[in-house]
Length: 241
Image 1 (cartoon, rainbow, N blue to C red):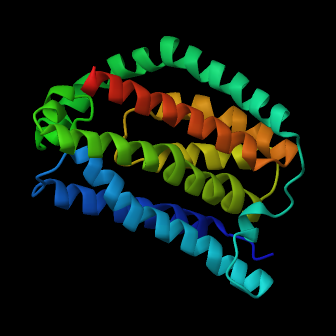
Image 2 (image 1 turned 30 degrees about the vertical axis):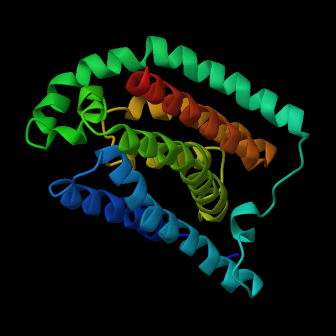
């Protein structure tokens, strides 16, 4: 196995997020579509190919062919119902954190968030539902559909294979803190959503640890998809309701 050093770990994390964040920041100043749709499209052509490319390249070195096995190496088997049950328990925890932790974090960082957004076009504020409603109905529907596809399927599965699969298993220092460290870096890598790090860490660090100990990445994949599905449903109801 090709172990990942600390500098290479940082590079692997910074490369995809820098690509999507910089392209989003630049394109956003010339955008004529909802910025959420813009980000999902840019994520599809930058973040996803880079992360999957790193995994596939590692697979070529380790197995002789371009494969995702490097992200799934050493995974144990747990029944589907047990995987879903564990994921749902963590999803319930995420719900509690969204009620008791997220609002406090948002309130604490609100002045900083508003100061940053005041220097950017209105579309960069994903909480500005009225901005999205100004677009035509077909554009809004396309935004909702592609946001659902990217945020519930493409994005979380790719990120879980990359962070919880490849990076966690290949990091040079292997101990019980490894999945926690990767979870913290995973939260910080969200440059495009920089004001929810405490909430994200508290949601994903515990499930990352359990997935690491049980050698089952599918637990964290299910949780990630569940959390993002909730976000998509909330957005769709707010925009179309």
